[in-house]
Image (cartoon, rainbow, N blue to C red; front, side, top):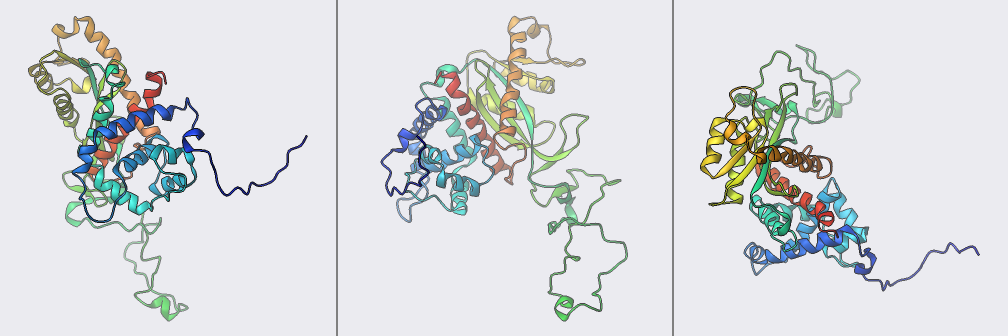
Length: 390
């Protein structure tokens, strides 16, 4: 018998949001871990808010929504609010009822920027890793470290000499103006068009820029769009770009990220960030740790600092003038660390293809850093359902 194609006119729904999510959906385990982690941070949230005034967006819901944006590759806050308006699974994860209104995108953005600082992003990651089900997955002795470039939200046209840097005019693409020419109104133009205050697209064009023959340097130039971005390239064959440098510290047992950081890009940033992260993760550790890394970390000063901190430097050897000798390479653990350290590329790849960090949409090293750390925490959450057998 053929069914009837009649639109339902039901006014009320008696199905709970909890019942609409499949029992074995991966987000169930992610939501459980996130809720437990946020509950442990309740005292931290309490000191961030006053006990008077108009209630803001609850920090727990704001963080869950930010994690959803990363996990599902939602490219803007406006699109996130649109999805939350009709996506029942998103409402369930964030904690909104089926009749609760979603937030205005600009209000959500303002509240998020005030809440999600670098310090709080690190505490969220630490709370997730300290969860009773997640902590047994971590190694507390063997780690790997690496860095990657995060493209800044700034174009090369904004990279101008510091003395004469002016904000670029982004009205639209155009050709470079001819030399020694002025723009004069044609005889047929009306008085409104000849008015100096009248908008003339010919006067406000995003002219093409030719950098040929011009020496660009971070010492003499800066981006007027994001002054914290630096012109840098990581490999000899690659082109330089305005970017930041993201750093991660990974434990070697299951490849979970235990520390994250982001700095301005330069040749010493990776080694300095590696020391900061290992000290932050294991302050005053009395047990011997190991740290795997690629050849970029093979520097005498860095290796010496690791040995003084009771960390065995399992760093890949350079072909010449290596600071790593037979005292380290003769042990079986060195070869094991070299195999495990390559897994650190997986969080970087996930962050850039899924987490939206191939080119950040944020400006300023502080905002980009807090987002990068939260993205690494989301990468850990994405892997938990499989690791926990959920």
